[in-house]
Length: 172
Image (cartoon, rainbow, N blue to C red; front, top):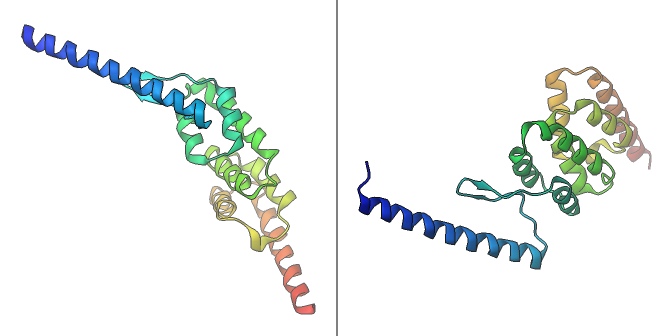
């Protein structure tokens, strides 16, 4: 049991914590507004700043980064996570012609275990098997480990392309 003095001291500390939390929140909001750097979420005490999923996703798609996505995704309620993941992957799919976005795309596919979609992407767009990124390689390794149906069709396609390119290099 706390003495009256300890109770008063605890109240003062709590009010100072709230003052600093308010100061921190206003500072971070000003930085976000000035430098256009959205933060996925900030924990202040027991509070979590709410961020609209669509606004966060639109800002994140400008410069997608997997760790930021993971932090925001884990802060979402369980029922919103599945639809958010599908929306994020669908939006990233449209930008996979950028190498960095493609790498983040395969990280998301592996994280959410969307193997069918990744398999289709590999079969449709891998032109040069020598240019496979580490993320695509990790995805293929996980695909083979999970023994998903269709993973056997990736290897002949990739090896066939590899052999064709190897033969062409000897001819020219």
